[in-house]
Length: 535
DNA sequence: CGCCGTCAAGTTCTG
DNA sequence: CAGAACTTGACGGCG
View (cartoon, protein in one colour):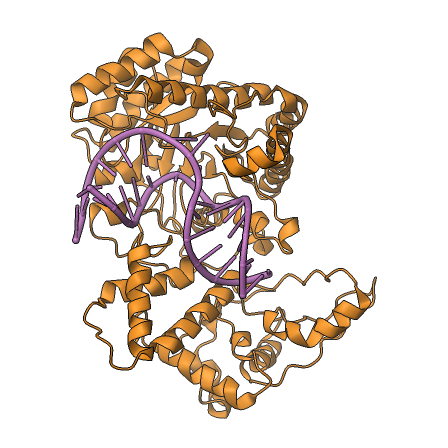
């Protein structure tokens, strides 16, 4: 049984609050009070609680001293990675007792070792901070680490909406649940890669083994998708590391039987598999070498799909790329590359996508119609770089191309990150999507197309849309709470040298007593906060 | 195990 | 003009 976190209002928990008045923080499903129990000292625990509350209650702005900010930053990052509040099942009384257990700081107890085969009837805390107390015993016994029980996640209700859309929703490359399986050796993902140094050191067979493992895990992902009613997936471009590299490249033939197995499974379930090579794929570059690399990349993607036995719906999506200060000339080069240079089997899978900086639908539709190459319409990109043609009209025209080519139409959907203002900020994808575009309600436009959801939360974003619109049955155990501290900006999601510099300056400044703080600007401080949540 | 600097490729935008 | 952003984070070394 699950309950809504929102349902636990203060009014419903008067006794709890009077007993524990320090529970003055916003309810958060991703912030575990376990993180406060990291030392045996209750006093220390409480000091940390107080400092954490300060941070939380002040929202995203860090107003405490830098060392504390740093401490909290690391703490919250760990917590948000691990997630979560565990509350066991059923009625309100057990909810309350579980919450009390959560929120009352106490000295860590020695974890009871479960006998092998015994049912796990109790919820064991997922608490990395208890580890030190186990260490001696674990070393002595030399037993493999016990798998930690799955935490129970608190999933909020979603606002229900209506749609006529009946197509498939898909996600790109990575499944957050499978990727984050613990221990790390259990992680399932398709983008194992390596460095060239490692290829030199370990040899080509070793690289190829990475690719084989990736395909093996792809099979697991396809099965997971089927079990969760997801039937549309973008294959990772990194499935076979360096496969298109001029020196370290290799054919995928060595993996043909496993690829065929994965493809057969997808076919059996009616899953659509597509690919989307990276930004290095430039069909209009003035540099011949770049075009050659791009074609190698496309051929590699094509071979992957071919060996899987994927049909015509298995398209390879690329953007127009750069403009090189000469859009008409570049468009001619793009057309030449597609028409005269691409091998036929590659061209057969090729589709173009409008981007947010250079080529909108105004630019691409004429190319697409002339060369009979479908256009994958991206709602988010069109919002950032609008074309003169309304989305519904664009989709109608590209759907005609899809129909001529016998390929099922496909579109992309994503939201900008909340609070993003500038174009560059708005480029970045939000964690999830709030709603489906209205166009999807229109006959011949959107009701029967496939929609790739490009969101940081991957399959979670799909499942959330399933819930909002009642599109498919959703398994509750597959749901994870959203990150409540989604950063506003792209800055801070990745390592940001400038931000780190500013942050370090702040820390140095405070610790160094009286050093100049002039260079510390708020943006950088906020970036630091973003980092700790998202990195 | 967690952290952090770095990593194949191209291009554009920003300060 | 250097750094950061897009794409899909992941590796590798270190504590």
